[in-house]
Length: 336
Image (cartoon, rainbow, N blue to C red; front, side, top):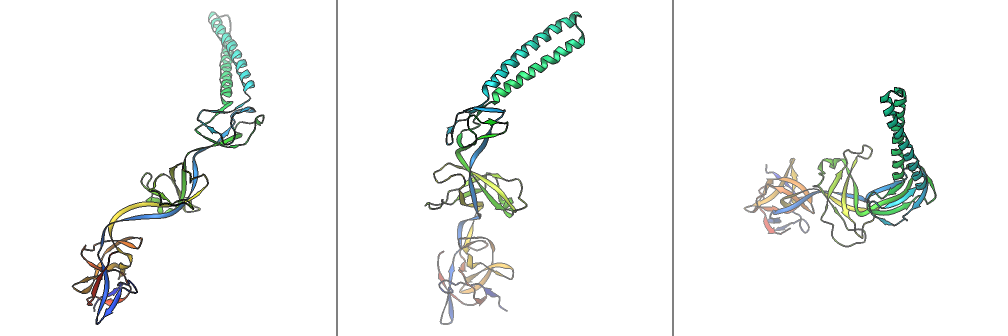
């Protein structure tokens, strides 16, 4: 019994017309060197590259608040000072106590060598000297911590306290963002986890809503989360992007994640159909139909990646009609 062909061309109506006794089928040749991409659609949230809550490090009153919301600052710029006068006075008192304790300890060192004081008196003086040195170090650190500086270049985006307010260590005073560059974070399905390679996988941003233009060439993935969220079955990737007029923190951007790019022969997707569990195409040889098993890959833009099709084969371009292998046909060639 002749093998049945499932899928022969429908181009126009069915891609097959009948003239006299011999049907006319539309055929094409395999296209070489077509680039196929394994992709996924994603939506990401724009965020600043760095953000920080600037908090007080010592208790006291804010003596100086040197920036306002919206101010641009450089790394190392002083943002505010807390209880400066009291802490400077504490350092002075600690320096006096340290000098006295050091002198007493030197005197005790001499006296204990002469046998004029007990060993206990000497050790007490030693403890007092070490304690005074430690208290001086703490006082100096508190004074240094009273002056809070910008940890990076950025913009003050929020002011939570005012000059004269009392603050405790850890109390938030300002918030700042590094707006020189942004990152966009995307959540992808867990099934795509193994496809993402940091530095290799790229993300192409679609134009912002209302903007014209083609998608970007793509930004490499800079980060992939080390695990999948068990609640959402997703994982996070991030890309670094430059600051542009069409980006702002909090925006949602559509994108295409490109996991891989391959070059392959291609045919119209409708030309490739399963037959008894094997992907096949119908070809015309010597004016008659034949079945050709092929290796079929991904589908993209109406094309299917294929292997195993000779470059000169006349492949039936589409269809879902029943024909017998060996049937006589006439051909009409088209490009796709």
